[in-house]
Length: 113
Image 1 (tube, rainbow, N blue to C red):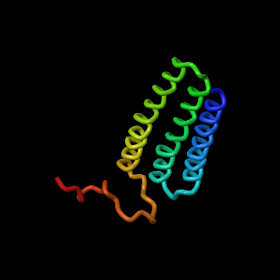
Image 2: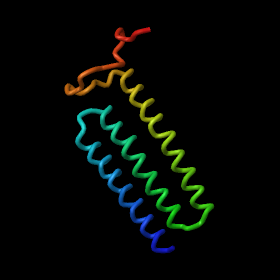
Image 3: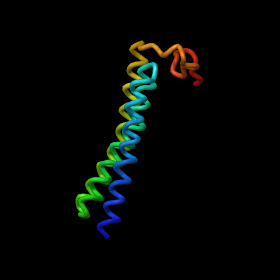
């Protein structure tokens, strides 16, 4: 049973590290604030949440695993919402989109009511 827990922990840590690395690469490579926020909020959230679950599995204690799952749910529910609110505030304050951006859905005057 210990080998199964060790393998599950290793897989979760490795997959979490890959997602975290993808987020770090996205933050460095994407052209503007909005796409960088997308990389950080999506891939970074999944990566850190998977590593948190790996800690819970590695502990082999139900109460620690339950707290890890609660932390996972907290990450998944709050990080995208906060990134959306920060991006919206940046757009409203006038932070420009990259010239590579094709469409600005939040531009005033274009909204359909």
